[in-house]
Length: 162
Length: 324
Image (cartoon, rainbow over all chains, first blue to last red; front, side, top):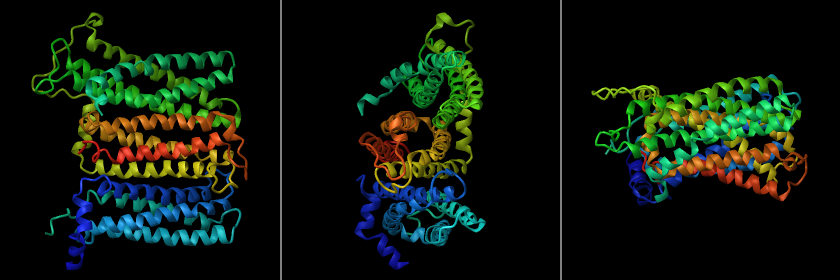
């Protein structure tokens, strides 16, 4: 906890929380939302295509969109760490935060499995196994979005631990 | 943002409120004439107007709240002599019902427009649905407009209007719905979570379609990607509904928030942008492996800018604006 408190009270974290600059908390959270749109947008597009939406679309070229997904993910790792550091002592004891982390971990494992099956060894038509992976992928990202948004509403309120 | 003061917004309401009635009536007439004369282009044009008017109905509805705030400036928001709060609330409720039906009509018209591209005609299911919803919406909007007119035109009132109850309990559908959101603590966070799901659906289509036109994953043809559009539109519809739940709960946070009007302006720009991809021949001709023409690239780039703009202004409501 001392370590977390030190991060929280670092001048950078304090700037994030207290600065009235648009580039501080509002801007960092904005980038986190845009990154979410990039990661989930691309991944959900692939999932829904596997599940039969837009059947005229060939699946192979979708692999070209992966860099967009990873740029979004990198953005969200960085902005997520900054947002966590700015509120470390309360976020780390928030169950909702850990549920979100689990959802993201599962979604990433899911994406890796899906990628191997769909792009490395393409099969046509998609097996029920692949379709199931597409459904679980949508579910995990949905869970991550909902838990992420709810972080603003549930769990301990920041500042109480001081 | 001085031009976004309440008095000006009241003017905007008085300007916009003619579209859902007169404009919608014209679209409906055009649709019927197109039907009778078997003109597919005429039907298609009227579907475009239905869709655009449904989009404009969003700023039309919300500037109504701004108008009341500009008009009823008493200590406890009392209205000036000769203006009945009862009539205002009746207008608000009639407008809310008309607005909800208009969103539905606009969505159905948009689906017809979307299918038109594949079929080269208005799908037959859509003709019946648009006619039914169109006449119903027109009736509801005419009713809302009629009550709205009575707010400032006592010469057309048929019966004297009752005074509001003295204990300040004047409710109505719009206020009751807002009160419901406020009194159920879980509803706001749930709407917020869904608002972000809708945002992801919309951005999914915006990114896949527009990045392709800009040169990524060129093996995907435009007609194939075009099949994805309803996913984005469903996301937009979900966000209009959840967004309205925020607005009904705390209208004052938005009516006096300049950032909110920028968001609405960008939404209208987004609606115009998608029409380029739905109506023009040049994006439709982008086949697998083709480079997109310059204008299509420009419109794809602007689509990304416009929708990130909508996200930006929505996100900044409490930061740059004065909400919460």
